Amino acid sequence: MPLTGVLARLAALWIPLAEVRAEMWAIGVRHRGRVADGAREEARALGLSFRRAVLLKAVIREHGRALRVLARQSRS
Image 1 (cartoon, rainbow, N blue to C red):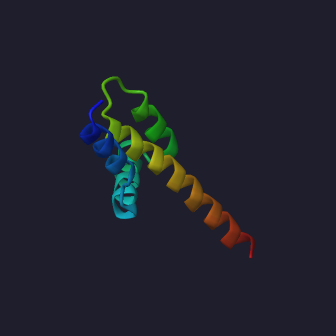
Image 2 (cartoon, rainbow, N blue to C red):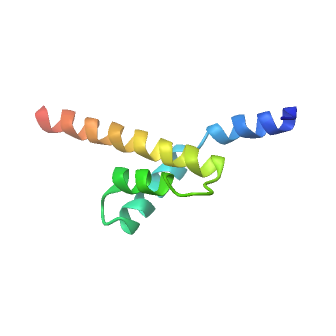
Image 3 (spheres, helix red, strand yellow):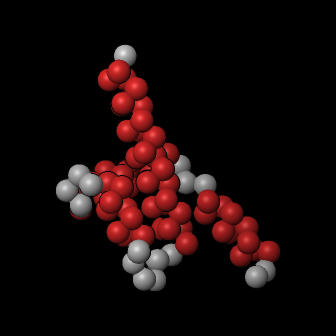
């Protein structure tokens, strides 16, 4: 793979938090509130672009982080 391809893939790894949150909202709408399950389901699709796969992984990770924060807040 040429160097430009490698650099493009590395740049695709960084996705702004605002984009991740927007995608969380969109997936929640499409999958009736099941954000993580919906993201996993969409990640299994054939022909998924590299950037889309990274975005879906970020959605799953951020959703888990948000749930942990909510759980901590409800305990205190």
